[in-house]
Length: 217
Length: 320
Image 1: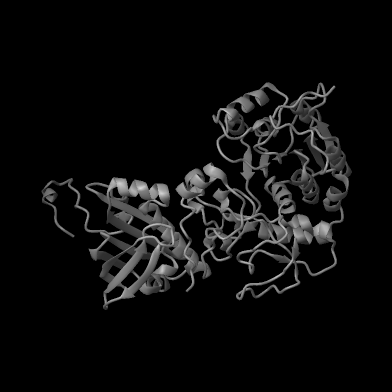
Image 2: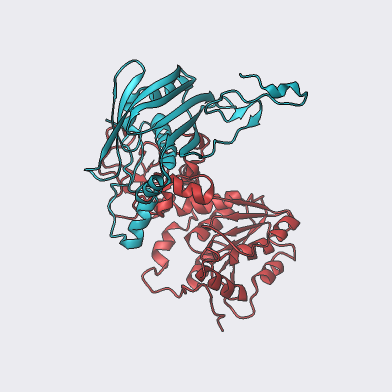
C-alpha cells in the first residue's frame, strides 16, 4: 500500500491500495472503474456453489476456455504463463479470426489470476478473484476485465451480437453453469417458425444469435 | 405429461417408456436457489438471462413455451419436447392414475396449490378467488384442502362458475347487473372482508368499470404493460391484516395500484410462479390423498373448442 502525502492531515484517508477486482476495500463498497480514454471496464460477479480451488483450476485451464467462452475458437499454451488465443469476430462460420498472445501476471491457486495481452489483435487485461461467500456456502467469483476498443467498434458489436462488456458477463454465466451442472443449457437449436423482420432484429440485438458455448469438447 | 422416448447419456433416473410429468419450470438442481428448493428461480437454465436481468433485476429459471426472456425454450405442449436437466424436473408416474388426473401436475395444479399455500390460510378462514379458469379451480380446491371454511369464486363464465360451485365454492358473477364485487365480499363476510384473496387472473384482466377503459387506453399507448383491475380490487377487498396471494401472471409496469390501501390495512402480499418441482411433489401426495380434485372435469366439461366470449379489449359489458 502506498503512503499518501495527505496523511499529514489528521482526517486524511489512506489512498486505496491496488485492489484489482475487489468490490470491498476497508469496509467500503468500491464502484467499478469508469470507461475513459478508450478503455472499457467491466466488473461482474457470480456466486458459484463449488470450492475456490476447483473454480481456480477450471479458470486456469486456459486450453478449455473455448468450452465456456463465447467466440473463442482455440487457446494454445505457449509457455508456463503464456498462451495464444484465437477468437471469431462475428457469428458467421467464415468469420474473421483474430488472435493475440496472453500472459498470466499473477497466479495464486484458489485465490486469484490476473492476465494481460502482450501483442496481437486484441488489447485486454483482466483479473478474476475467488472468495468464499459470507455464509460459507459457495464461492463468489468476481471478474474485472479491461479492454481498449473504439466506441464505433463496440457499438457495431452491440448491433450484430453482444457488447464486449456483456460478453464478459455472459462468459461468467456460462462458467457458473458449467461449474455447477457440468453443462451449459442452450435453446438455439430448438425448431421455430419464421420470426419476421422485427423478431430477427430483436434476436440479433439481444445477443441471441451468439452461439452458446457447448460446455463440452 | 407423456412417455420418455429417448434419454441422454447422463440421465440416470429415467428410461425409455417411463410415464412422466415434466414441470414447465426448468431447474438445474445445483445452484443456490435450487438447493433452497426455489426451483422457479434457478440461476442456470435461462440462456437469455441478460434480458430478464434488465427487466427484473435478476433472471429466473428457463420456462417451456414462454417468451424469449425466459429462455426461448420450445413449448411443452408439442408432440415431442426436449427436456434439459432430465434428472431434476420430471416426476415419474408409477401407478395407474389416469393421464387426465396427473396432466395438471406440470403447471396449473402446482400453481393453484402454491397460491393457496401463499394465501396463508388458517382453519376456518374465508378465501376469495378471482378467476375460475384452471388455476382458479385448483386454487379453490387447494384452499379447501388447506382448511378454508368458505371459498368465494369470482368470474363471469357460467360453466366455470358451475365447476367452482361443484367444488363447494360460493360464486359471484361480476358481469351480472347490480353486482359489485367489493359489496358482495363484504356481504358474504359480515363486513370483515376475506381473510385471504387470490388473484388467479393477472395482467389480462377484464373489467366492466371505468378503469377497464383506462387500462385499455394506457396499454394501447404503451404507457403501462398490464391491466391490473383484479389486483386493485383484491387489495381493496382483503380484510385488515389479511393476505393477498397472486398466482396470476404480471409482466411489467402497472398503473394506479392502491398501495396506500395495502399499507394502511397492513396486508401481506405473496406471489410467484410455482416452484413446480417441489410444489409438484406436495400436490402429488395431495392427489393421492384427496378425491375431489377438479382435474378430470376440465377435460370433460369445458368446451374449449367453442369460440370464447372473451373480448381481447379488456372491457366487458354488464349482462342483463
